[in-house]
Amino acid sequence: MATSESSIPETMRKKVETYIFALQDEIVSAFEKIDPNAPPFKRDSWVRAHGSGGKGMSCVFSAPSPDPTSSPSAQEPNTVLEKAGVNISVVHGMLPPPAIKQMRADHSSIPYDGTSSLPFFAAGISLVVHPRNPNAPTVHANYRYFEITEPVTEGSVDPGKVVAWWFGGGSDLTPSYLYEEDAIHFHSTIKNACNQHGSELYPTFKKWCDEYFHIPHRGETRGIGGLFFDDLSSEKHTRLSDDVPRPKSAEDIFAFIQTLGNSFIPAYLPILERRMSTPTNHHQRRWQLLRRGRYVEFNLVYDRGTKFGLQTPSARIESILMSLPETARWEYMSDMGSDEASEEGKLLEVLKKPKEWV
Image 1 (cartoon, rainbow, N blue to C red):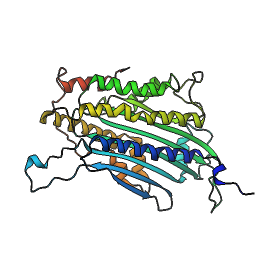
Image 2 (spheres, rainbow, N blue to C red):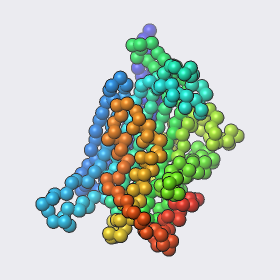
Image 3 (cartoon, rainbow, N blue to C red):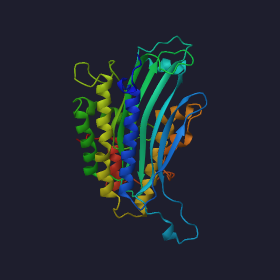
Image 4 (cartoon, one colour):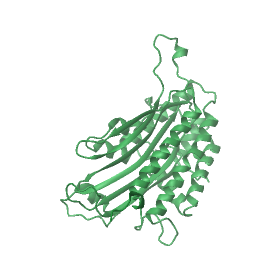
């Protein structure tokens, strides 16, 4: 007897895919409502080819190019956002032996013989928003699901047995100018989201975030932190206690991911609305561009996701580099921020010594 499609249990793959597409639409719509006179986000659907499978949707905002025939004052765009992207990828393919060997460090259930590849599935949402006003902070968020299965016979439409799965993600704030009330609001919101699923999650993942987004050659963090986590599954986690309650089943961790994803708008949008019209000047713009230079340095030199993407065959380079700001600046031996009493110096102080905001 045939089984009706509606009675087939929905896989975690499908649940994650459904959720991230809905979250993407909600976030993009929220940004478009903030600045209704700006051009809408460009929505770019794509399909992965070249021997692997998958699809995605890149939603990208960039301000219109100025008219070279207009006056200099008229050429300056007045959009709230300068550049932003909210991207989704849902891909599958074969994981080579070197990658399997590396992943076994945190997932011992993955079989490894040194020569065989294994099928993988990955789905995630990643966003970066660079506002125009130097008083409004850049924000980043990423939530993802990864799955490895046993090999299947050629031509099979069903995935093989799952041998390992995990979730990862986080969100973090990168201001050019420090407003403590903004930092407290952002961290309080994501802390409250974490606390619904376990008391150890926020302090552990906040510390991990400060460590991950550190720029060693500058001796400072990229921003004022947030959350970062990876390899969250039913297996023992190196950063979490065994005897402290936390989500461990796939369903419970997925619920945690949804709570965090749903907290993005209330964590960030009030900050953007509060700062997007703050009066600004050339001095602040110069500092903003210098800080964006640091953002570029971290993303291209240290960020694991960027490096993994750039090394992936047939990767969508435009989507990978979506996180970079439209404009950045580097100055030789810049003195900006050297005065500890200045607004720039106050930011550098917390970037060199991460602070507990809540």
